[in-house]
Amino acid sequence: MRRLLVAVAAVLAVLAPGTPAWAHVQLVSADPAKGATLTAAPKAVTLEFSQRLNADFTTIVVSDAARQRVAATPATVDDNRGTVTFTAALGNGTYTVAYRVVSADGHTVQGSYPFTLADPGLPAAVVAVRTAAAEETGGDSIGLFIGVGAGGLFLAAVAASLYFHGRRRAGNRTSP
Ligand SMILES: [Cu+2]
Image (tube, rainbow, N blue to C red; front, side, top):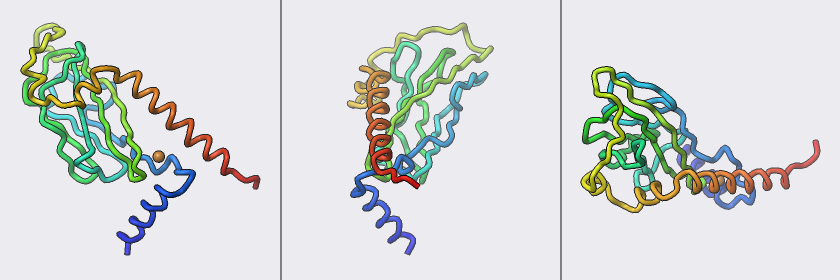
């Protein structure tokens, strides 16, 4: 029964002219946390979202300060959580975690956040110039996509999404 309701809700969410913003999947928690400064290198990044994830449409990419992709496994999905595990040790520096997932209403949701590794046991921060080998481990169009203009594309997508949803909501509003 619950499954049927979920299916009906999903269909309605797609068909409804004013898809509500609450239908969008949201990042609930992250490890490492947003803006965290760590004193020991993380082995993985785990992101928890407000909806069950589709493994086929879940991408998590970690980049270093030089915008080079950090070697890691593709994202594995467990219910609401997506995880990438680093395949090489991280050096000190600031990293960006970028994610792209799909909402129940079919809209893509993406975002990014930084964390910093400042392990006193490691040498001073080096902006590593990673070789092509690091790229090849996970070389796909996502890396290029995120590398090319993460910030601009994210902002444009977010702005467009907010604009259209806001407009629809405003248009549907009836006086009390
Ligand atoms: Cu939507």
